[in-house]
Length: 238
Image 1 (cartoon, helix red, strand yellow):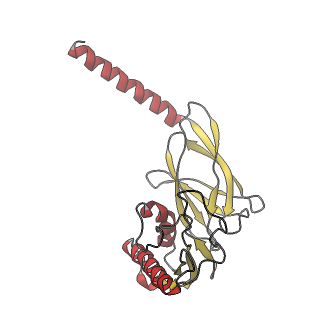
Image 2 (tube, rainbow, N blue to C red):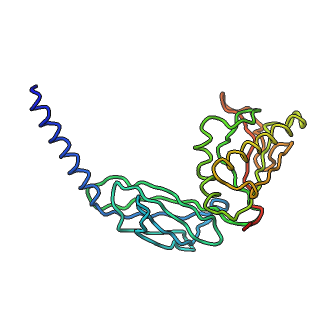
């Protein structure tokens, strides 16, 4: 194939892709779903704001307090947006989401979880950021802790305690050192992410979590019980 012909094909292909992307970006779509309290699992009525990739507010809505249902329209297919939640009873959070590409109008469904802002509330770090009997944050912890970190950064007045539980009850002296190390590892991580040290306290536990105890039966091969880690809301600071 001649060089000129190859260049022409590349130009035509680029133009085709541009036309397709433009067609996708012009398609108007809607987003529906429910807002759910992460702790209780109940529906939530809350103020919602949608921002585009440039930080411009493009839509707003309020979810239904009885059902949690919301409906937002006027969004563009194939685009990335951010959803912000604003309510004094809940953590202020910004959650990015991307809409699928489509050539015609469509409605997409997405549920969101919101964290209640109550003193004494325990927020579980759902995926253990530690390996068995280790206090060092494991590979991938940035991804595991990202949602929690963003919530803590956006709610700058919240004081919280890091509570860590051990993996077994065999040796309480060992467990005390293990969980103290885990709590300090999480504390150091959050500080590195820009959270003020004055907001953070730690609590190391010697016995396993009574709310999420080790399984009574042997787990599947490769599956190990790792002690729970929580973020507990303790109060507010200036």
